[in-house]
Length: 171
Image (cartoon, rainbow, N blue to C red):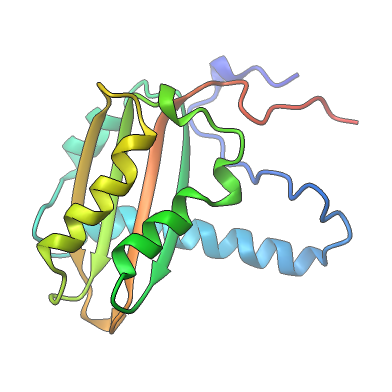
């Protein structure tokens, strides 16, 4: 049994149940892409200009003693890109079994070009807010990345999930 009390950071990939016969390189490629998106979601809000920004101190206080954290990210384009990206991220297999109602802190990172509309930021928040505790601290930030074209990326970090989430004994 893993003693999580002595771990500062643990990155894990949730089991793709029912997909045991999936090719390992394909699974690891998908995991690496998800990790890349998560890192981009954080680094973009620190390093790029945005409408609403946070700095390292803001992130530190948000993540400090947060407990188990999960990250989901999705990219969409088109007329409803904000809603589609957010719904896709939240519905991700990585949140399967997560008790979002107990989440006390959320970080929402929205990355798009300078064409990002306020109504898109509001759409993302409206989509995420009902999934969290009514008193949850929700920090939303944006980043401008002109190389994204028509794409909009939503990255959601859920902080303070139950430590037992997804934990299963090894077989």
